[in-house]
Image (cartoon, rainbow, N blue to C red; front, side, top):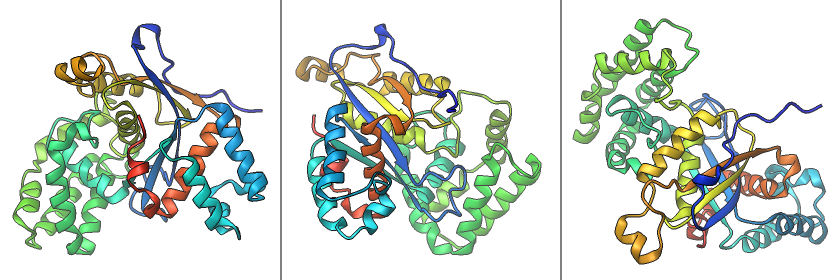
Length: 331
């Protein structure tokens, strides 16, 4: 017997304005808070705008034309099959203009979290194009830090332990360990931009952020959860500032109603078109969120999500397939 589905944010009538595109999503490579010691260094979040019958037809074609059994429509088995090359080429061609893939490098995601949470005010816009002004600092630290070898890994590991909700050590010890790791990294003499990020880390501010996490301050997004910024990027890509997006998603514990409501508000404040765009191209009015709502489903029951799952898995194993056509869906 299946457990009741949890999470989601069904669309409300007042929240839906104008044109709406419906997409189905799934991810591949998610490993919880184990972002550093995973066999999957990237996470992919895939989405398609197929309707139910189109997804059924696509899956049926894979099973009949390429002789895939139902259990082989998981990316690992799919890519190991004898006809994988031709099947993959056909699959991607069938999704041209109908799909989008967002890729997350887990290590770089942690670096963006260090910048977005410990140097600025934590926000549900963190890690997305809406916080683009912080991207150069994260990129500089990531590019320079990797040359520091084990001290770089120790620094990232100390950050994970610092913000992990179920930390094993007392706060004082995790804060001390984090700054010890920071100081060890500084001794490598990275470049000026990277050193500026490290120098900007302040113990009192770090303690304040950790205290907010420990008291379950829900205005702070979960720091080790990449699915929420990935969902935001997916919605912004499909919306283009001109239409709302209704998401159907495989059940994920991160997609609680409270978090989705906060994300929806952030996107309403920052993710719509400018006033000029509204008049020129019919963009979303100010204050209307591009995220119309999110419906949680069991992937076994929804062929659209099954297609998204296959695309996400293939893209994680073969990131080179994520070309411009998959980064920006047709509108």
